[in-house]
Length: 382
Image (cartoon, rainbow, N blue to C red; front, side, top):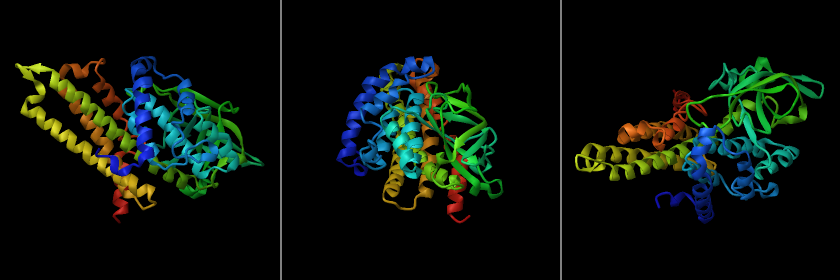
């Protein structure tokens, strides 16, 4: 297979098992969850029980002790579960929130949050984005003021995936107003902390089955021991976390694009017009040739960035490149697949429209395409 060069036998075995489970346990229920607007809360625990969250986490907390490639497989296979919101909820917990605890948490925090998170017994969320500070992380306004052995937090967050149902949140706060990006700290906030409320669940174009929320903090008192990592180093910790988050988005988008391609190819082999399958018309053949080229180029670009990352090599530019290319390609492919389906592609009963809706967030979330291009330019010395 074209992707085998990146993976070892353990990763391939995990893919085979997880892929079958996704097809059997998730995909058949996806339409129901999409219509309901949420997937079962118990799914986190089920995924944890089966060990699917464990890939690249330490064995002492219930992990497998593997590398980041397990997260790549996890994101790629979930792209075929037929519900972007379900995939987003599971990936955000496993591949975004928990790595912060693994990489920056102290022993007590790892025992409390990482072990339970790997087991699926608790759900994590990352709370960085604010109403007036999206890609501009340094511009956040949520304030944490030290008061003896506590921090008192006031502010708000928005667009927080798992925001309604999470058990714990990694909240980015300003702890030193005079230091700009150097005055941001991550603080772990538990559900039920007095002064913390989920303002509302947001209604979205896509990711319909995920719980995306607005959060509010009003004179919320949190122990200073809940600081994650180093005080006033939250910006740097966020930038570190963004690297694998963006890689996950790139590989997941590429897998979703390929899934959309495959179901459209089958449709165009079966759908007839003017006496023959519509896929045999030259204009449509060329669309498939273009899409496959874009998808494979994106896969190779993303896999190259993954290889650089797992080998500890500098890859900020490559990650930004694949975030832009893969995420935008997935939207373009899904749009073209809708066109190839004709009027049926616009109908809710056909999966291609759902893929387009779910993928449209990808060039926005995790740092917009425009921000990624700024990163690339800066790394080129411009």
